[in-house]
Length: 228
Length: 412
Ligand SMILES: Nc1ncnc2c1ncn2[C@@H]1O[C@H](COP(=O)(O)OP(=O)(O)OP(=O)(O)O)[C@@H](O)[C@H]1O
Ligand SMILES: [Mg+2]
Image 1 (cartoon, each protein chain N blue to C red):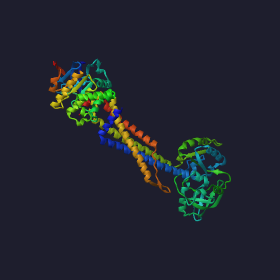
Image 2 (cartoon, protein in one colour):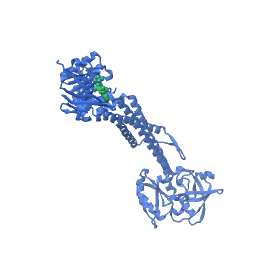
Image 3 (cartoon, rainbow over the protein chains, first blue to last red):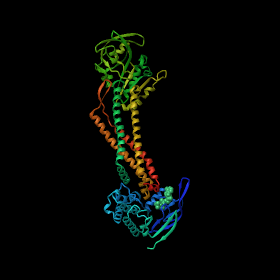
Image 4 (cartoon, each protein chain N blue to C red):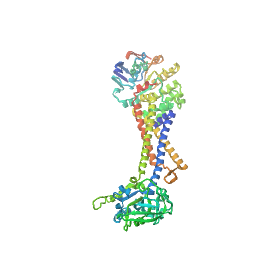
């Protein structure tokens, strides 16, 4: 459960204050599959960064399952993200020096510090889920965009996060690959009841989500649920 | 930690050429320092050995004030029997001392019946002198000084050349004693002594009994006590035991004796000190090389990987782990460079010893340098380089750990 009250974000541009998010009040429940849409520059990424605990709001409170994340310091926030949040990026952002297997293993070692056996089990399962088992020893630069994004999805999910944030996850992929990736995330959401929050322009995503939040100039202008 | 090392290693290998370049820069620096230290150490040991073993000894004891007026070789500043007994007592008790010898010095007129000049002479006990100064004989041309007989003289090289004096020539020495009476004796030239710099470096040698005859002295008298230690490195311990001697006072409550170490007597000590300063300078240069090259590489490394840092930070890697990743990277670069440098230094020193590089010093040619790589030196240099690598990585690592993930992720 994510909730926030009167959240705003101001960027200082020299002398001018740029109010990018204005009085945001949002509630997202467990297992929701949500898209934030809106024109370019409307503040979608900013909202995602705030809810994903990457950035702190200028005003307001953000609560994730009772934790007021605006009160946490940098290290506590990092630990909180490591335990509760997964990220999927537009340009995949795999670590180039690590193999597919090691990329997925990274958060389990460096962040969650899980024992070897448990790690192996989880990674192998996820590799199967994202259909990358036969590519597990390759390095990111040997993979196609769709394959990289599948690895990135596995990496985001391996820590069993409550919420996954994905900023334009399909923007660098072709239609067919995008559809595969979207289906993959939808299946995972249904299987593990993981919350997914997207920031996107992609119609293909908008078509499958349960809820569409429209943002214009940092203000929510529409928030509609779609019965599935 | 294992995984941090793995990641750092992979990152180092990713920019392999840059890593190799930096590591080899450090390697060259380390080799330079270690080989220089080995060579200068060898040269220094030789030089010090040469000067102390052929002329100065390790420690000299005089009556207070003698060294200050050593140019005039004053006869009134000689040690008498009682004083010598006192000194001997101390020397015999000192476990660091190998041997010692007495010299009775004087200035005299030297004549070959054609021309005459003044000469500085050491009256020596030939057996003791050669025992205390094992390289003394190597300074002497024409005869073995350990069997210098009464009535023979070893003439300083410069004087022999200037007056065209050869072995077995007869010359006359004329001296004035303390009471003002003049005496002359004939001597046969037994050989010449090489000039070396330092007090006594231009002196001739005769038997101590001849000095007494020349000066008409009946009792025991000594100008200078020369001491050889078993191990030069124990100089300060030996001096500590001799210290009570310098505290002894005469009737007028003035100190009786003065004791000098070879360092105080030899002008070579300054050269030795200069070699040491060079050594320190080279180390400082090495430190700068390591500092600048590692700093440079690490700054580049952070700059190139901003987006990657943003990614791992977003996933939940704590700032301290990010900082450790970069510190480890710099540290490993330093360790590689050092290990390689140390190994290469051992090889180079081994090669120098096998080829045998020769040099000349004084009368001796074809002296081979035998540099030794002191393990402690290797250890100290390695530790310095490794610590400096770590220090150089601190600021880039801090920068990486302080990056805001949102800003970092926006980079391309
Ligand atoms: N660090 C920053 N400093 C100043 N202004 C910023 C900063 N980050 C974002 N902005 C501004 O905030 C506004 C919202 O940006 P944001 O990236 O959230 O938009 P977006 O909806 O994600 O756009 P897009 O669809 O193009 O990704 C924009 O006007 C942008 O210029
Ligand atoms: Mg955006």
